[in-house]
Length: 62
Image (cartoon, rainbow, N blue to C red):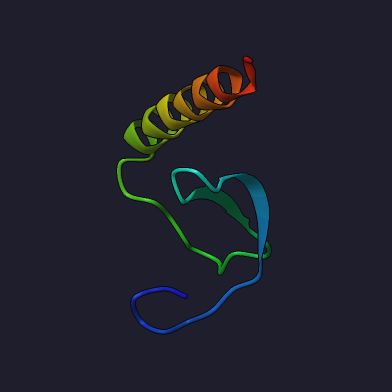
């Protein structure tokens, strides 16, 4: 749900129950839908991805 109460279906790309974080991909986003500062968002998303991967790898060790 967006701040204006519109709802969209989304695909779960990645989740981490330990940190209560998830990455979602909107299915059929509305036309003209844009994220501001998309380059910054992509860099931030990549940083989160690697951080979550590190957490998963660390928790998998005995």
